Structure formats: structure tokens, C-alpha cells
Length: 312
Ligand SMILES: [Zn+2]
Image 1 (cartoon, protein in one colour):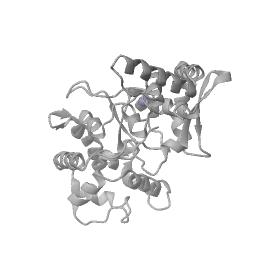
Image 2 (cartoon, protein in one colour; image 1 turned 180 degrees about the vertical axis):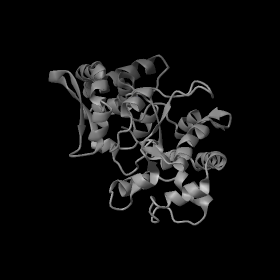
Image 3 (cartoon, helix red, strand yellow; image 1 turned 30 degrees about the horizontal axis):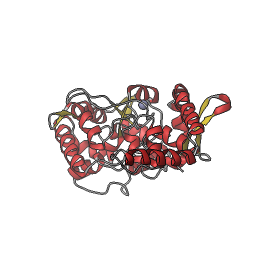
Image 4 (cartoon, helix red, strand yellow; image 1 turned 135 degrees about the vertical axis):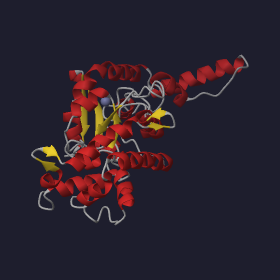
């Protein structure tokens, strides 16, 4: 439930070239693009050039991917099932595109596995769905993540190699999410993750609650990924923060900082420390949204510290 930003232009271009190379080899791209034009509105991809169409499809921003999903889910715009499926199986050209994902996934990017390069490019080392499990690669060939097709490729094969449909995640979140739709994507830059979802510690029940704003659709992430269940083992972290807050009240920290400064000045090793320096020592670094991508429980700690006004 954190935002993970966008890939670099360099990575987007190189990923696109890899995908085009594999698609050229394994898919009848002209036929595929002709079929896609029946399900993707011209307002989203408007070009007569096959390669240009594929490039745009591979690098569609997440919001455009969601627009296509809404367009075909509406049911009145396009007879999606008849175009993509035949007797409940994918039609050949869509099956080829679906299977080509494995070729793209196994293609090396600067001698690295694509999933390793992908997380490095995003500077992402923690699963964006749960913000608990580390997903960094352990070598160029050993990825620590799985790539979740946000819109699953068995139902939406034309999104099989779209970069912003590939969410690096931990295996538990990937397995538990399965084919569910209606969740908020970690690539959705329109969604205000920091405001729409907050961790709270209910002291009387010793319970971690995930509060959402109004009818926010982040509820689907919380329910589908069973995030509240996942976080109950971290109640001791919240309890520890509360205990520290009761022990080290802010005014005392000012006095402690004054004392330390006096002692260190006397011994000639003086350095000016302040309340903020001590707070960092006691509670750890104050988290910013960008830190959540590399710090397990980053958002959880941020929200608890914010609620108890620890850094005020
Ligand atoms: Zn996860």
C-alpha cells in the first residue's frame, strides 16, 4: 500500500526494445495489433503503425491501463470475451502474446534478470503491497521478487508485457492477490496513499488497525491482501513507541541535550546536539514517503510516530 513511482526513461526504452524483440519472434504482431484495436479505444492508442502501437501498449501509464480495463468491463462498449476467448480458451494470437511474457521475463537486461533490474530501477527493496517483506535480488540471477500482473494475464493477455502492469511483490502478496481486481495499484500516481490509509494502534485492544479515508477503494487492498491480519505481529513495535514516548517527553529531551552538550564541551569533544538528534536515536529516522520503498514497516512506523506526535 505504498506508491512506487515510475521507471526511468532509460529502463522504459530498453525494456520496450526487449519486449519488441521477443514479440517479433513469437507473435504475429500484425494480427495481434488488429485484434487489439477492437478492444482498445482509439482515444488511448491512436496509430496505424504496428510497432508504434506495440510500443505504446508496452509503456502505457497505469492510469491508461485502468481506462482500458474500465472500457472493456463496461460490457456495452465491446464484446471483449468473443474477441479474446474461444471456447473459454485464449484465441491463438492472444495465447502467443500471453506466453511471450515468459520470454521477456527470461531475457537478460545488462546481464541481469529482468525482475532484478526492474526493482533496482525503481529503487525498490520492499514489497509495495504489504511494505513488510524485502524483495531485493541476491545476485544478478537471483531475484527476490515475483512480478505480479496487476491485471492478470489469463484474463487480460494483451497486458502481459505492459511494464506498468508488472508489480514487483513478495510471493505471499502475489499468491494471495491472485486474479483479484479493483485494488489500488502501487503505480497509481493519482492515489494519495499517505492520506487515504493510516495505521493506528488501539491500545485498549492491543490491536493494529488500518484506517481508510471514507469509502476509499484501498479497502480492497486491505481485505484482499489480509493486511490487518499480517500486521498484528507488529503490535509490540507500536507498544514500544508508546512506552518511549511516555519515558522521553519532549521537554526532557531538551534538558538531556543541554547536559550532553555541556559535558562534551568540557571534555573538548563538544558537538551541538538537539532534541531532533535524540529523537532519531530513540525512535529511528523520521520516515518520508520515499523511504517506504526501502524500509520494511516504513509506513507503519511513520503513521504511529505521526499519530503520537513524536517528532513535534
Ligand atoms: Zn508483500
